[in-house]
Image 1 (tube, rainbow, N blue to C red):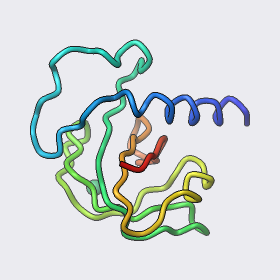
Image 2: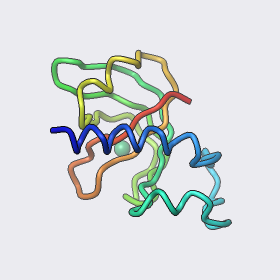
Image 3: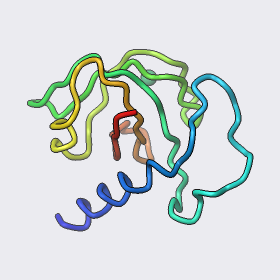
Image 4: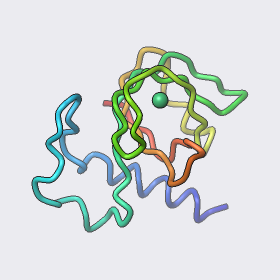
Length: 113
Ligand SMILES: [Cu+2]
């Protein structure tokens, strides 16, 4: 579906402007410079890829805290929205990603740090 692809691309373009993401701090809340293009304010999570599973369309990521989900840092597997997102990453890459709304923990956007 084209609309989904557009969403993924748009999100990827927006990411570089999200600004520095605190690795451990809580500095969110100073200004809203990136708000205009991010209607639902998806939280950007930092992590390191531990495994790329192309057949399952999933990534195992050692991620930092995800405050919007009350999740501490841990290593876990995430599905990706589009398997094409797996083409540009490999084990050991440091990445930033956002998850879709809801409990399904699907990676909606992904970029290398
Ligand atoms: Cu987790």
